[in-house]
Amino acid sequence: MSLYRIMLVDDEEEVRKAMIRQMDWERLGFTVVGDAENGQEALEKLEQLEPEVIMTDIRMPYMDGLTLTARIREKYPSIKILIFSGYDDFEYAQQAIKLNVTEYILKPVNGEELAEILNRIKISLDQEIEQRRNFDSLRESYLGSLPILRELFLNDLVRRTTDVDLVTPKLREYGIDILDARKWLAAVIHIEDLKRTETPVFSNHQELIPISVRGLAEDHLRPYCRFAIFNSMDGITVIAAIDENNTQTGLMNLFNDICKESRRVLEVTITVGVGHRSDALQEISRSYQTAVDALGYRAIVGVGKVIYINDVEPVSRGKLQLDGKGEAELITAIKFGPKEMIETVIQNMANRMEDAKVHASQYQVYMLSIVNCMIQMMQQYDLNMDDMFGEGFQYLDALAGGYSREKFASWMIPIACRMNETMNQERDNTTKKVILEAKEYIQEHYSNPDLSVEMLCRHLHMSPAYFSTVFKRETGQTYVNYLTEVRLDKAVDLLNETSDKTYVIAEKVGYQEQNYFSYVFKKKYGVSPTKYRGTQGNG
Image (cartoon, rainbow, N blue to C red; front, side, top):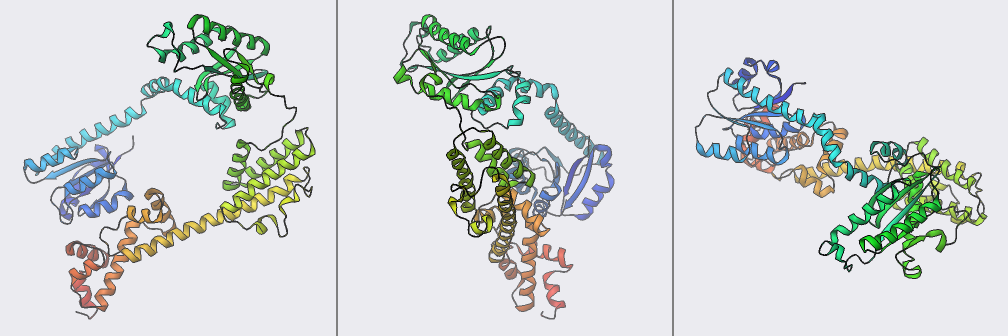
């Protein structure tokens, strides 16, 4: 196991150096990643160093150990904190307990005692990691949550929100045996007037009705076909696999029998909507949607029976339309690329046009739908249509036959790629604008001692975590380091150009404590503000 990262915080440099020198950190399972002279400096280093353990003195200037602990607990609750105190003070110990301090240690502490404490900390950290990595425990937890994961996946499948490539592996992972069939059918079981159902069978236990209906359906379906059954927002949903062992007609008869048995045995009226067959399991969402549509005919056909969508709606022999899934794939490809993905998505759309046997007007409407989707994206992202489509493009060119379905892909792919390149460039420009705006905000508000990354991000409407990553990537330094640099540069200007006292300059550049300002200043320039002014001939 790798070494745990530890940071030391003490205002006495000799104490820190002695502790680093005297302990065999590696043997104890730790590595010292840094140290700090006070709580304020420790907070500034914390994000960069990412320690698992912090050892801090309780009495320090600018920010003491308890205040530091409180601040750490707000943002990093999992860090282990050891507090050293030279005072056997019950109040200190009480505060430390409230702040969930890992160890409260009275000084002086010798190396042997500290080694024992660190050993306890290491054991605790090891156990936490072991618990998180405990495969038996994880497996048990996974198996416990499997029914929920299974239901969520099946709901995603019928709502078209599942990645097509994941359908087969997920079905295998969840043990859902409906693969490798000739076709599939979706059905939705609707319990009629559930709230008003009054039956002696479920007297005072109406919440058990859906469970009983589902159980009844499972018992009838199990000997006949492979199936998946789950609760969806529209009712109890069934995906049935039709193969050489059963037929679609037989399945319809079985659903009719389930309706009758529910009325006879449970005294509950149910209606079953059955959708169009699906030749590909990945397209079962259409079968599901048409099963829901079939249930919509209950008021016309009646309840307590099976309603097959083909019986109540004319069968479409050919349909070519840009559905929600296709639109989402096109938008994703254009927004994020790469070029190969854009080419694949648009080529697939063109292939659908080639395969569909529909009237010429449907080809034109389909092309217009795709063009319209792209135009909406251009408007959303303020892209110039002439730059994207080429000067002189007319919206109705596609409808007028200006672009045949044979040439459709070769016309659309370069346009989609131009959109992708322009959006990527805009994204980079936006990031640069955000960084520039952040720098301007810091320049305007550096004198505010409460200026924080959270305050800045509220102004920018960004999350602090994302901003910190982007800021570091673009500027090469952290927000805290940049702010400190701005404040100290302003302080130097004031020292050179005014006769203000040090405490006044400290306040003007955002430091509430003159001593801490002097400490930070000396750390950068090697001399105190007063001596710096003297060397410049202004004092």
